Image (cartoon, rainbow, N blue to C red; front, side, top):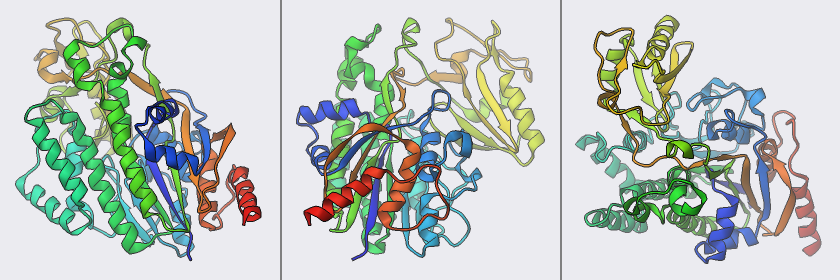
Length: 474
């Protein structure tokens, strides 16, 4: 029977919170998975500004440190020519299934498997060509416009999405949860829970193609709980912060983070049921989070987004002919036909300032692309206006930008979770912190596929120890 590996990439889950919620009885499937796994804490081996998931996941997938792969921005994964572990699986003639992995890419035109790009990807195509586009067209809009109560989704897009899901794994459980969500929104402010419905939809797709394709390596990525931690940690542990939310906000979001973990616990339970007798299940988070306390003097870190991107770019004097591609939070790419136009656009964006001279935008260009976003972390003074080198107008800051509803209260931490459940379910706690560079060779070792090249770090030696324990037990 063929061995295979399912990698549950649950972005930025926090070890201490998992332990806390397991003790409270909220996460029975996490508890079971932990009890049947090698349990380790990984070390991202980076500090800000290089402590970002779109950097660390590239390390997980390649075994390369940031200094080696040099992928710094979300959406820049395709710039890396080095192989990912799924490229090595494909080269060995085996099939891989990449479902939403962050900042991913595949090599060449003959990849053996399926690829559903992450919703922030700009240069990664789904494989087989066009298969997942009806799903991605809707999900990209909802994820990139998550601060908007009514994302701009056409009726035709909704119909294509519904037809795709109806024939590609939509489960009655997901239908029930989606209906309960919509009904609940009629009486409660629970729109933030929609992210977990998107998780369910993606899990349904993953499960359908895992069963039909039987890949040797599968990855499944989710980000909703990471988002909840970034914005609602203040509501989970208000005593940890100097600034507390008002009573209405506290009531609205107090259960957001536990809810996210509980919904991921459901998916873990279904993954355990999905696994065959020769399947390894790996839970990997790449990094984690902790309370963000370094902006309490200004009431917490505030994120600002543009009301109307096209109107703002016209005000700033950004050259026409760009493609606008929003990514996470306030950040976005602008893609041009020339390096000169991108350079001019970055300069124009950096030229937007408050009347007191404070720069409003972060912007940097590389080749024909600009990566940018609002650089302010606190509300400017009441009535503040902005200036542009390309316009005589001086609109109010609030006319161009709006604050995301919740201030950020969670920040990244280099510790991550790595639980490895081999077919024999050997449990052991690994006392050392495992380098994130060890994950890629370890995942490949679980498939019994030889690497294309020698990794800088070998596979975790504890894996061989577990196999020897298993052989003795047998």
